[in-house]
Structures are given as structure tokens and as C-alpha cells.
Amino acid sequence: MKIEQTVLDQIRSRPRFQISTQLSREEYTDGLKKFLAEHSHEFSGNINREVAIFTVKTTHNEYWKPNLALRTETDLLERRMIVRGVFGPSSAVWTFFMFLYFVFGFLWMVFMTIWFVEKQIKSADFPWALSLSFLMLFGVLATYLLSIIGQIKARAEMNKLRHFAEESILSIAGAADQL
View 1 (cartoon, helix red, strand yellow):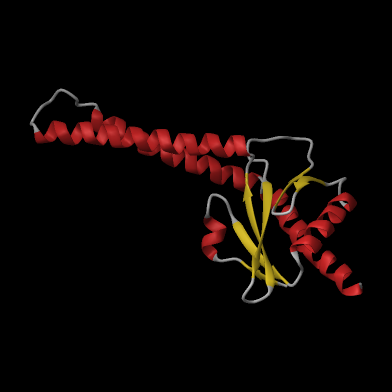
View 2 (cartoon, rainbow, N blue to C red):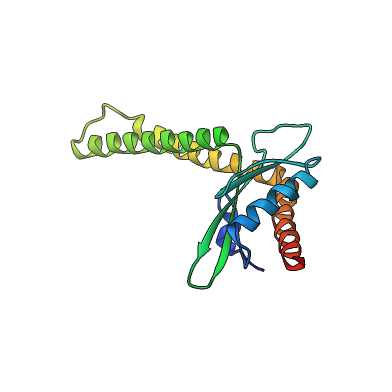
């Protein structure tokens, strides 16, 4: 088993990692279902052949309740399977954050265009355009900072999920070796 993670993977808004293993996709899926059943008091999840999504069972439900999505790929050249893990909030929260990025970015372009055109035609009809464009940049920065704060608050749960992914592969590989 080989675990890869780069510095860039750690600073993304959705941290990720990948694990290489000699298990087949079917062995991994079946073993993952058994491993989740053994740890159902602490984790919940949904598993199918290509993607598995897990969360930590907690009493609180904050906006950044981390999910771990494990996607399996087969590397035919090296005859191994790659498990790619991506941390992130629920899909509703992720969609909301992407919507905010889109709205703030679009409005920034609109206000910058208004300001630029106003300067080109030497008009003074829209003196507020530059101020609002900076406000939109502040909105993008605030959205990013909220996501970072959420990650910091969810660090312990993300570590549990990461440990769950690593232990599940070690357990499944150990069980496969015993057969």
C-alpha cells in the first residue's frame, strides 16, 4: 500500500489523497462494506462499486460536516487499484459555496466593466462601480475564509475519516492475504 499526498492537496478547499493497493475493486468494495458494518457505531456511509461516501456520526451538525468520498480506479499498466479520497462538506453546502463564488465573481466582472467603460468614455455616471467591485472581491475572500474556518473546526473528524480509509484498506488487504 502506498499513500500519496502533496502540499497542494492539503491547501485546497477540498483536501485529497490517493492510496495505491493490489486489491481488486470487488475485493475492496466487499471488504469496505464489512469494515463499515464493524465500525457502524462511529461512521455512516453509502458504498457502491465505484464511489463510497462516509461521514462521522456526531451529535452536532455544523455547516462543514466533512464527508469523505472514496473513488476507485484501476491502473491496468501497473496492475493495481488506486483509491482517491476527497474531503468536503455535504453536497448542498458545497453547491452553496460554489454559487457564492460564481455570484461574487460575476458581479465583480460586471462592476469592473462598468468602471472601465466609464473611464474610457470620460463619464462620471457610475462613481460607485469601483467600490462595489472591491466589495465583491471581499465577498470572495470572506467565502474562502469561511471554508477554511470550517475545515479547521472539522479537522478532528477529517483525521478520523482519513484513518478510517487507511485502516479499511489495511484490514481488507490483511483479510485477502489470509485467504
